[in-house]
Length: 324
Image (cartoon, rainbow, N blue to C red; front, side, top):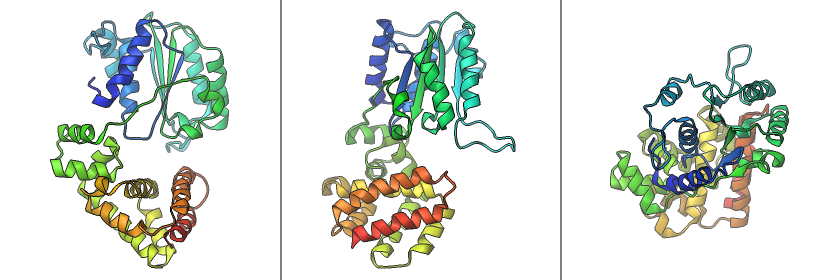
């Protein structure tokens, strides 16, 4: 498995711990979406289960264990994510029964006499009872078991769970590295630089920004914020955002605000950021910073019983106040 360049240093650190027999029983990969933490988690799981990893620790991809893993039938590989409700719909949280089933798997001996590796993703979607059940397992770890918790929002994980995991930090690439990586993904040079600016340096998000429909969404989003600054009604904007991917719009807006607040040099390659910077140039930046926090809080509430359009209106009220 080939990792992005900025993931190689944390990979080397993990392999050094493995060589020194110092891998913990639980790792926490908690970084913003788009930096590749899921690729790192899968690569580590494959590496630990592989019968003959290479000199850098990467799985060979050919042994019987790797073949089982690729087929999804390796008994010592557990990938825990959202399950299905009784009505067949996908849940929006990880529930206690899933964690209990995981613990039962860990109580059994290894099928192949080696590591047992579980990836819990997204760990920040554990509900209260599931988190408590997982905590008991973390407090009394089984030998030869590694749990890899993957979370986009570490703040949503209980402090008791965070404290019992060893956190692996992932630093994103600098601008030159990010552009170079996007070029390897097939982006044109000008498009790569512009998309990376729009994503505030996040390479995974920049890859999404290369799509024409994403750029149209960004332009429409900025037009809405310009209208907001001019005093247009909030309700029609909130209704449209609620119907057309509220989480994506709130996430993109938060990144646009952050990127536009940075230096003029970083915004120079993107006409969209130039427009956004012109909108916020006279904003109250303390209020704008609080609005950024509100945007991310509102994203976390979208899966709650609260109406998404009312959440968005509440957020836009704060943004309009900051722009005044």
